[in-house]
Length: 308
Ligand SMILES: [Zn+2]
Image (cartoon, rainbow, N blue to C red; front, side):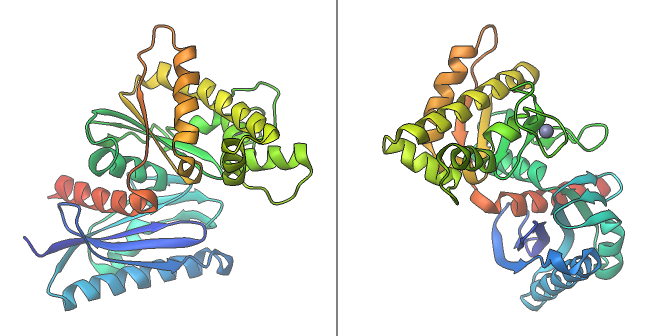
């Protein structure tokens, strides 16, 4: 038993984070690989299977026993059937990942959604560990969330729960990639913040992180853009809190790197909007970009528990 490990893989649009993880969450080996999405979904799938197989082989060579695989990918996932239904940045369309992985490695496999897996890891091993009701929000090029209750992330009826990035906070506002307008993601994601600053200043290539840094240094325009984003984010969080009544909101993803420059004004702005709701704690994620991979390991372990 003590030699058991799970093979965990977090497949992103550009890179994959992979690990061998013990049932207690200890990472015994970690490695990273490029996803090579430009080579097409079949090549990506073959690459994923090769890497997983390699990790299982490595485990055995080190006297460990690989007992399950956890794989998380972005997009729409049918977790029940282990199918990557749709993922624009990896190019997956109805890829039966669980079946392929089980055929190749002969190990029970769980397939999940990257942000939900990240939320699961933050709730069970990271910043949300003290609370039963955790809302994890990843703010990067998009905004997505995972609602984790008692260590379980709900996927929803169609695998699409937690899309707080598409709460409309500015009706008629900037166009969103989803086809709507004024979604939280179109106003307050890292890409939206950078874009807004570039639009107003005419200066090219400014990122959300630059905006945060400049705002902290007292630059007026950066301050205005940052404040707009924080206000929009607080509007989105107010709706999220009305729906989820979270005990703690854990912010991850690139924009959360801004730390208190984001968290402090966000707490103030949400507090100002709160009426009957209870104010949640708002904290930064603790596991960084390894959350998804650790979440994949947790999914594999949970899957074993269910199937045994
Ligand atoms: Zn949208």
